[in-house]
Length: 252
Image (cartoon, rainbow, N blue to C red; front, side):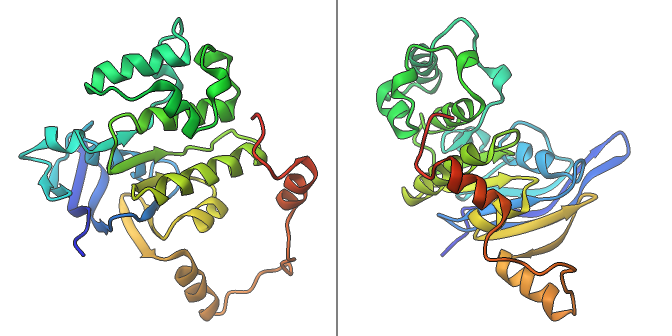
């Protein structure tokens, strides 16, 4: 099977500063691939280059066989990018926003169908700013699905959400992957990457320093003699919170 995304020796420099330093990796079709690293490591820059939103300094990128240098428009047609909250017109309700995005993508997706996919039918006439944090993130995911993308990019999708809303969004991301969509995500939550990602690349100072499945990376650390200072229990405080506040999808 051929990779759906292939990055080869990618470089991005800003006025002499190297944000991305010759990184290479591939993503397979249907995979959830996590790009992890501290702030300023080069994660978002890498995603923005693949998304055709930022120019690279050097290297090559292919998305489903399309060369980023030669055919960026073809790439745009097969990807979905999660917008930040500033990307939505404040005067429009959710249905109107989805109609607007239909026009931008030249699509005719039913807004209620899209809202149903993210459990927001009852908020169809609400404005984006009236939604809770979890609802806003779910609506943002709905907008990435309008053009029936083969790949979606999620940049820290659960930042600021409470544990219930965060796990609800995890379930939604898994549902989207089950439809055959490839998902690339960045996150600062390592438990999130461990739960969702098939493989992760850890990037620091513009370099990929490790790439493998989460379990393989953990096994490598343990094999090197690492031991936790505190014994791990079968559950954690977040599990307690979820159990006490309800496990089913609720308004978040």
